[in-house]
Image 1: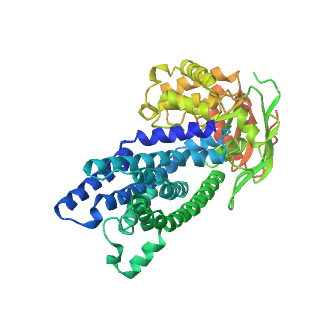
Image 2: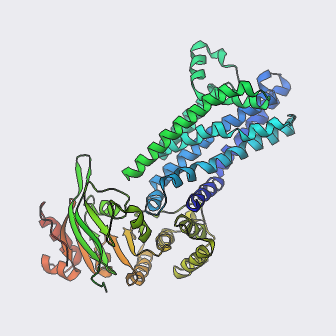
Image 3: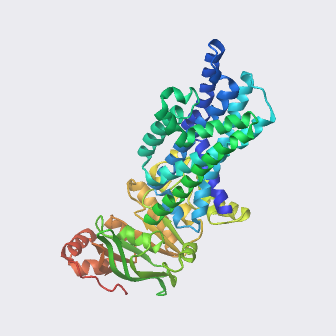
Length: 244
Length: 254
């Protein structure tokens, strides 16, 4: 436990001390929230109303977590830092949890900041905001484990390309945060419904609305992806550990 | 001086990567308190050997015993008594010097009191106190390497593996690190890989030369020069490597 705690403490500090991480992870979602709320105040769009937009932004912010987790793991592999730690009594579980747990804390902080900003912009605060913040951990499992998977299999540059460009675009276009996905046609709608992004957004929206029965099927969908990707990430991490 | 009690023994230690044999039936004995240097050109199998001895990589066949414990069957126990300072400065770059040392105490499971004592001791003995609060990424190459070594030693290992510890350092930084390594010699067994012949000569009790995964020479620097008939260690190394053909692996017991 103390080994894992020490390692996760290090992960946490690495994230917080990287200005790019802070800027994109915490700042960028806030900027988006502010800009889209400004549009909403001038040209009313139902999707940009705070109770619809804020849950979407909190989920979109998680795509940066994948990028940061992937880059950190990849960099650690590249610089022999992990090789050093492999010669210590640390167990594989210490590594996996040590990498992932701090990102859950970041996800909570990210969601909390978004809701504080939304409150300042006029969102009504109810107990459901608390649930929305806490249950961000459900999609966070998927995004953090995807980062671990990418970091265990790709170079830092490849992680930047795949997670920084592809994932953020997928998360933006196929999540229904800024526009109704049906506008893209039935094929895209079908693809989006098979991927976890739109379910993560709908899950958070339903939680904020207090509609837990609507949230459940979306949660199962996202959780299913999260568990599957976590299993793959653990396998990939152990594989690269063995390959060392 | 080594006390002739075996610290490391390899028995036909072999590692294959797909169709490449990186280490081929290595038989080697290293004694407690000895500083043993492994030399060889790139791809000779030095780093792979260290990886197997430090339980990072599993042998394809054969075995190695560290303080009598098999790297195959007791890797967890082996890891408790060894430490590795990898080729690159393996440090957490966004953490301060002190935090890096604390991290290593944490991953070794030290309690709060022991951690404070060990960190204080390491900062003092490696002259790191003046940069204790500085981010590791902001240190020069020499300081980073010194920190890397301090991190490896914080668990008081019985056996220390140094993989090219002075690679890329300037002359002064290298000389300072040599002094540190010399101070460590009597306290633990050290296995060092290096490309610098003068480093091996200055620091080692014995030298092993690897070529294409096999051990082609094992002995002191003086024996190395005598065997090759050369005056300088570098010329002796070149002569031995050039003349060594595959299949000349020799039992390395002294």
